[in-house]
Picture 1 (cartoon, helix red, strand yellow):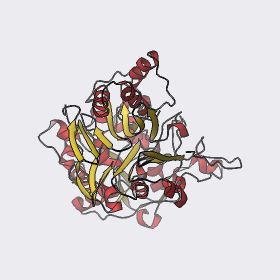
Picture 2 (tube, one colour):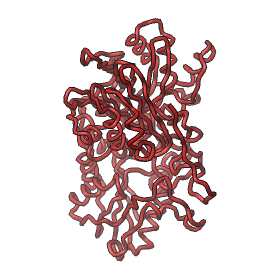
Picture 3 (cartoon, helix red, strand yellow):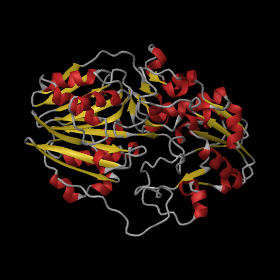
Picture 4 (cartoon, helix red, strand yellow):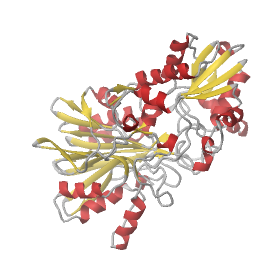
Length: 498
């Protein structure tokens, strides 16, 4: 199978340095100062239209990765796959999907970090080994991948990609045990946050790390089994949600049905808090908690912790709208659409001038003058990373006539890097790692600045209340990493892809 990358024919001035708007380019500042979720996965077993189901499932997960995507099917033991750079709707057309025959499939959407924007790292990765064909895709990051890769290379393994997903294939291939036991042994060596899908000619395997850092759900569509990073993908194809995959759990589905197994006990549940705050779609549920509802509670609790006397409340679209509604309901201050997101400035947007390059955020976001002019505005956002975009949005609201701009953030200060599959800047670029709240307020030109407390965040999510940290990983806020991290060796934010 072959895949192609389509490039523009003329030189243009861009906000980005690569061929794609979301391509990792190593720059310290992007058009929108947000950390990015790195991947989404989708799997089907036992449906004659597996490729098309995967297409729609991946489309529902597009927010988790906009740079590359791929689907691999198995048709009576024969693998068919296609991968490409771009959005799902750009990489796959009707003819391409019709060529992907088979009743089982796995698919992937991906966002990469610096230096890894290449077709070779697009997933699923497909391998041949003594047991036949093997396709692998994952959401997450392996903290100890550099050490395992070095060990494998020194013992003769030859790697074809820079993806740490390939490490799994080598570990499985080198094991003398049968497939399932080899997979268990491979997973037992991994440290990090991950949700895997592995496909052979006649079975599908899924597993989550022992802390459950990255989400994965199972559903049913008739007799077929469906697996996805988020429940919204199940809804998209009309599948019924069954349950979340548990930390350390390994599920195998084949012609004999579903086999529930484990490769490790749950050490400490630690679902990424940013999934609840920002990454997952508001119509998704994680461990039975609806994201829209939990974000509304974040806004309500933030209002209780940090009331601001103002005229209007507005949220930075799209992830902060739910929290802004909650803040407005709690305070009685009217909620208004003071900020509008332009949904059509995606990967192919051509930058027309240096002036707009310097004001690039305006192409993504604009203030509604008639809403904010002459008003005291509470601006709700989910996080502050570098502070650059917060400054631009605050100034945008002031330019539109806002008398005051008060910034309320529905997370604690983002102070530490993530090693589990989030695109985090260099720690030195995280504004909260070196500045106080007052210094951040001054840096973003806000009249006041408030962050949600850790307790407020846990109360808002309201899940696993009897577990440590309510079953959440909040290392990016409090430096409490659930796994050992060798900071000098660990790879930052690779999505199992760089």
